[in-house]
Amino acid sequence: MAITGIKGFNDILPGEVEKWQHIEATARRVFELYGLSEIRIPILEKTELFCRSIGDATDIVEKEMYSFEDKGGNKVTMRPEGTASVMRAYVEHKMHALDPVARLYYMGPMFRYERPQKGRYRQFHQIGAEITGVAAPTVDAQVLTMLTHFFQELGLTEPSLQINSLGCPCCRPAYREALKKFLLDRIDKLCDDCKRRYETNPLRALDCKSAGCQEATQGAPSMLDHLCAECGDHFDKTRKHLELVGTPYSINQRMVRGLDYYTRTTFEMVTTMLGAQSAVAAGGRYDGLISSIGGPQIPGIGFAMGVERVALLLAEKDFSRRPDLFIAALGDEAHAEAFRLMSALQRLGFAVEIDYEGKSLKSQMRRADKFNSRFTLIIGGDELARGTAPLKNMDGGTQVEAALDAASIQAAMTGGA
Ligand code: HAM
Image 1: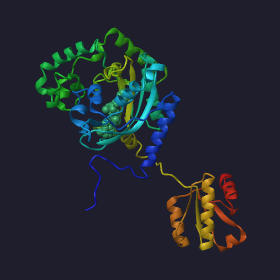
Image 2 (image 1 turned 180 degrees about the horizontal axis):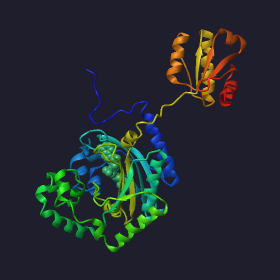
Image 3 (image 1 turned 180 degrees about the vertical axis):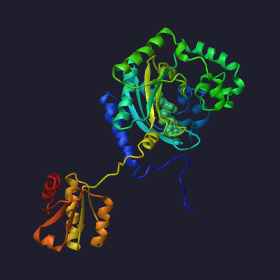
Image 4 (image 1 turned 60 degrees about the vertical axis):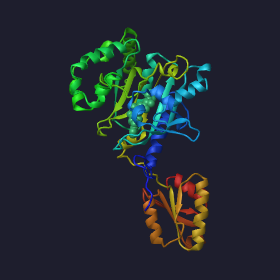
C-alpha cells in the first residue's frame, strides 16, 4: 500500500504554489517599503521558550505543541509561532545593543496539534512581522497600516481590521477581577474549557464560540472601560493615527488573544468567508515579552498571517504562469534547431517550451495549447532551408516571418509581432 502524508500536513503542489509565491513576494515588497528586513529562525527551539512567552495556561502550550526529547535528552518543541523565536534571537544576538529598534519579518512553517479542518492545519505557514523598541502609538498605527496595505496590494476587500486594547499589568488585574465577579453568577453556563480557565484565564470566555459562553458574557464589563490613563491615551492615539492615514478599522471589545504575552493594542484581520477560521492575520503589542525571556525591558509589537487562509481568500484568482514561446518542430534536424533556439532564448530571459520527444505536429500543437504560450514558432524542412519560420502571436493572431536566430525572434516577440 502506498504511504500517504500525515493528517494536517499538506503538500503545496504546482498550480497552487504560484499563489503562495505571489503572497510571499507581495509581503516582501510591502514590508520592505516600511523598512523591515527578513530574519530566518530555526524550526526547533527549547520547550521552555514557548512556556515562558506564550504562557503555560494557554491552549497552545497546554495541548497543541509538538514537543519531544531529542537524543541528548533535551526538551525541544517544533515552533508553534514565530514571535518567541524572533525575540529569543533579538536578545541572544544583542540586536538591541546598537539600536533597540529592530524591524523584522519572517515566513515559514509552524506546528500545532489542532483538529484539522478547512483553514486549520497541524503544519501551517505564517508570514509575520515584529517591530521592537518603540512604545509610541504611531508604531501601532504603522504596523496596522502596513498589514492593511498588504491586503490591498493583493486586491482583497476582505478581511477587515478589528482592534482592541488588553491594557497592561497596571490595569488588567482589576479588570480580570471585575470580569470574574460578573461571571461568577453565570459560571454554570460556561463551557468546560472556560470553567476550567475561570481562575487562570477568565478573559477567554469573552471570545469563546460556545453558545453558553456567549450568553454568559452578554453585558460583561469591557476592558476598554477599565484602561488606566496611559493605556487609554495609547489606544486613543493609535486610533487617531489610523484615522489620519485612512486605515479602516472597527473596535471589537470581546477580542481576546490566545497567547499570554499581549499588552495594550491587539488586533485581528477577520473574514466571514472561511467559516469558523475567521482570523486571517492577528497580533498585538507585547511590551513585557522581551524581558520575560531574559532580555532588557524593551517593548514590541507585531502580527502573523496564516498563508493557507490568505491563499483561500485568493481562491478565485488565476496565478498560473504562461511560457513566452512554444517551438514546434518537424523532423530530427528541425527538432535539434528548436532545442538550440530554446536554450539561446532561455539565456536571453524568455520562458520557452518544446516537445522533448519530437512527436507528431498534431500532438505538439496540443501541448502548445496546454501551455497557452504567448507565441508559437513552427519549424520544418522548408523553414530550415530558407532560414526563417512563422512566429505567431497567440493573443492577437498576427504572424511574422522571423529569422532562425535568438536575437531576431527576441526582437519579433518584444516588438509586438
Ligand atoms: P496566532 O493568532 O496564534 O498569533 O496566529 C496568527 C495567524 O496564524 C492566525 O490568525 C491564523 O491566520 C494563522 N493560524 C494559526 N493557527 C493556525 C492553524 N492551525 N492553521 C492555519 N492557520 C493558523 C501568533 O501566532 C502570534 N505569534 C502573532 C503575533 C506576532 N503577535 C505578535 N507578533
